[in-house]
Length: 622
Image 1 (cartoon, rainbow, N blue to C red):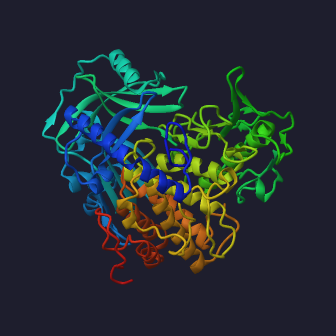
Image 2 (image 1 turned 60 degrees about the vertical axis):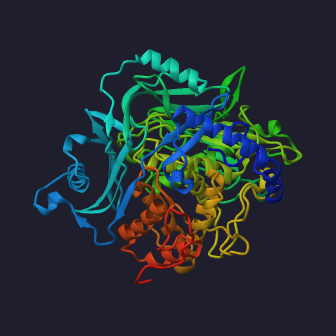
Image 3 (image 1 turned 45 degrees about the horizontal axis):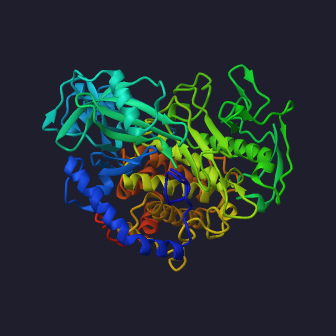
């Protein structure tokens, strides 16, 4: 998803609050009529039921307009159950019986008992261990075929389960396990429906829960559109040929760069030498396997300026000295070299930072070569600078572990001269964070932030990590996103601990139903957490020292840890509970009441429910 709101297909930017209100007023009647017509059509086709509770459907559904023709697809995702067990945890069944077990065996035994399923109904998708817990991810199986949107995850600490999530289904009808539609016909159906071309990634046969009662057999086909830069995973009914679900993977040496903790060229450039973290990138940024490069390409990132005539062209330097002068009065075309180098630098800095906090090879990160450390490789991040497919936005596509993430940075036409998003670090960080959150939620599938509410939190985490990287002292301060490219704040409000400056609360989700709007609420809650933890435990400028105890270090641990605990397609409430459980796992619950207070201040207190009504209550003991 892109960094701004507005029309996702055109990349039109978010306007100021006043202009947005005016636009909404002028278009309200026309939009309402159009929506009625669209809804009537969907009901007539049986694609949706009517009426529905909008607050509930945000947690289980999402309607996407895809492809050049704007075809609409509504996806269903079973509402997850998510339980946390605090510092104490619960002993898993095999440990109760005194039996030795692997993490997979322990998690399986727990799910069998908890969900009342048999062992042959569980297919392990992936698993990895952090320095605190072991995470195991499963899919439900029916007729020995996995159900794509029925998943479960278990977090273990020693002989205890500390949390689990599940969205398994108990359907009334299940399609036969043998497809009537051939794979080739399914590919043609997917291409026609989505408006793209099959990208030759191997297809799969999976069940898909169309709703709570019906499971259909599907061919899973990846389709990309080179013109619009869309990248989808289409689920084609293997009997009828209908496309019943679409997963979007796109979430809209020496280097002279904007320093990582700064925002934009307005803060000045510096020449940095050998900035790589040798723990995160032991072979540096310009080597993968036995290959050494003298271009802005390496094990973690390839940054390039795409061209219709020359294809992918990375910036080159025979001595790996990427020092180019930035012309503040120049156009983006005149600053192509510093923009490409800056994107390469920030992408690598993000890789190295997040590696320290657990986003490693076995935890589904992005690397061309995993150096024998496990996980799927050949999936470094590709960053297209000054990408010609759009303006005034950026996006990031996150396919499953083993396929490269694709970041597209556009030029911005809202200032004179025009400006380049690749030179604004918070936008690059925002986009890279989509890769982090989509990979860690659900165990590396890239499928688990697909509902409106989960997708909104995806935008929020991206803004929050941009906020975190540019928080440079113990002082509380407001944060604005996109000042360089947009001339002012892209969001409705600055991120602030002042409810006068930023009034957003959980209850405002009733009217903030677009993913970027919802994301602002989630990022505001994270801003409160950052400020509270820094006020309590101080600030460390050594942000790559993940062993530190300062508040900002603690905060990033909680963010990364909680992503791995939360269920597929989490709600705000489930994600909140995962953060509190992450604190119990790593810090013994030392920050429990601080976290509850931060959430309650923004309406996500102990009494909050999916009806999106504010609760400022704290649990007992706080």
